[in-house]
Amino acid sequence: MNDQAFSGRAEFQRLLVETLAWSAAQGVRELHAWDANFADWPLSDAAALLALQAWVGPGRQLHLLALQYDDVLRRHPRFVRWRRDYAHCVTARAIDPELRLEAAPESLLLASGPQTTLSLRLFDRHLWRGELSLGAPEHCRGLEWFDALAQRSADSFAPTTLGL
Image 1 (cartoon, rainbow, N blue to C red):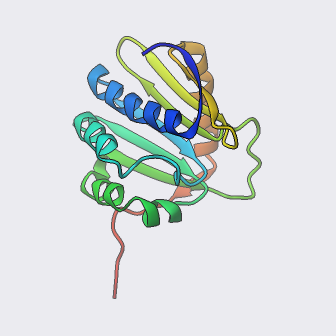
Image 2: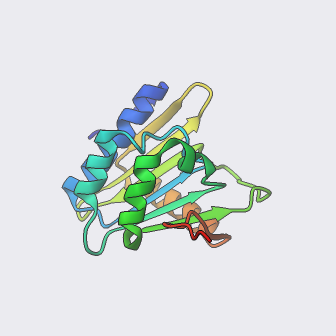
């Protein structure tokens, strides 16, 4: 993968899947993902699930952060099933919708491998413009922003639901 700007929804989704596959190949231990609702992420696509399956393993952790997960439950049933099966590798937190999101990207996926880092940011959901960066400074800024927001969040998107 190389640094690149992108535009278009299909390009964004392709890069998301490629980033997940890259993460598996690079031995990435943690993924950090932000989106208001993950509705536009290809989470139930076969390629994304194969990449997640290749990535998951001992010591791996996927950190999800969103405003709400209702759209994930409705639009991504295959991912919801995967999340249930690998609940030990996934944390899902929701932030208060009234929290001011200063300089927030529309979507963000951060991955750091033993040799390199990767940041995938969507800046404009209307035109689907963003960038993929392998630079450590961009990754570090994104991780600091993610961590600051995660500190003001609560557990959400339980792996199973209890029924009566």
